[in-house]
Image 1: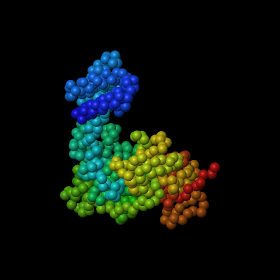
Image 2 (image 1 turned 90 degrees about the vertical axis):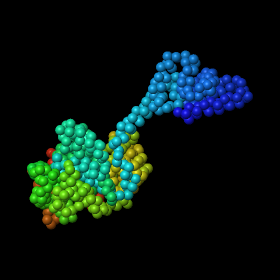
Image 3 (image 1 turned 180 degrees about the vertical axis):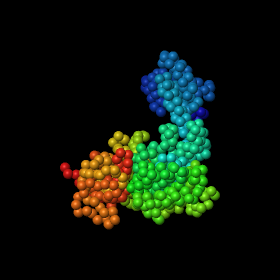
Image 4 (image 1 turned 135 degrees about the vertical axis):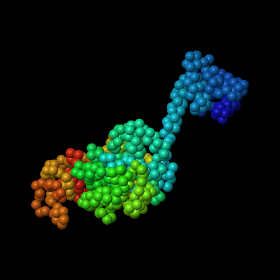
Length: 579
């Protein structure tokens, strides 16, 4: 309080000096304008009439001399009723200010009666903001480790698999083991989960944050979190396993470099996940189509009484999975790595476990750390497919930078609408940076575009090298699962990078032999399951896409219909629109 209180006193002494000088100049002038200069900076007296101000001034000085400790607010209040006449107002106001005063220590808050409530309101606002900040403090325990984060290689890991295989629980356990969630928070989740008779769910709550997800125990949105090892910086994308939310899962998988397929070893659960209609098959296939090159298969729930870390059960799961993953396109020797674990107890995630003497490989987190680096070109054209957008002091978009690098204040173009935007700020995993390279999950605050003008699936490019957009393209597609035949005129939903759009197969061009790759000479009238064909597709609206040859991440797609994945494909050629 003291330094702030003394400040007005010194101004008032200066005022006096000036007043005497003005008095020497011209008496009429002083009566009019004596306090104009010094009162410009003074917060309290902006609205005073000059004649009153002089009187208030002298009284203020006397009071300051008599009792130094009295705050300027009270002194000036005592004088105000005399001048302004509206005593009721001013007598009430100091109480507001006195209540608010101690919290913020606003000097001279209410010498001007009219100002009082505004000041008090502002003080209360700031106080409430401080309160909010205090409440939120326990949550962001993560960033202190971050200053050197961008230097580490950045890898996006998507957790996929059938409902209840334990994806969110493993994600939560990893965050706990790497110190991203503190023990106290987890204990709170455990208490809350116990109250709902769901005590085994508490780990998944670290990633399933909204109420609906917690009540039902099912992930809906793709959860995001991050953790670090000695060499790498990982973003966890926790995809939903339920078949109703497969479109969300595709969005998550399209941002990932590495997929972790979680399967449950518990008797009966593995079988339902893997049989027709289970999500284990579909997710593995979608991950491959989304461009995930490396797959880690975590055989979870090994601590279950029906399994009890049995090698036979582990091998059985492995034998069933390998042929299928091979069919999808993963190479069992190079691309797939199996490991047993328990998400609930954390066994074999960070430390090897005694229960499982037959497994000699590295536990999960060290294994991730030992993976070879991904080669990414940062000098390519900027391509950032948008996953999500929202308003927060401007327009904020989320997405994974597929190629190129982005820096602050850079001018970019939003395709396909060709809006020119400027990057105001860059967040990589909630940590602000000045520039970002390929493979990073970013939040960008943009200038020059409204949130309503952006849709998921739009792409940020640099002006020199725009991405292609259009409605018609030729593609090679593999029909994976479809009961009847597919003819020209067939409609489905196209998922390409982060974009979801209705599409029609307008013409079938030729069939492709799976073994030899030869194309048929005649046009097929239809295609059926397990056939490969080249077809012409036309979307309902304009979308951004590239040919698979030029840019694989934006040239692969899946076709879905009636909640099932029907076909996967790659874009061969973009067809110009006929006007």
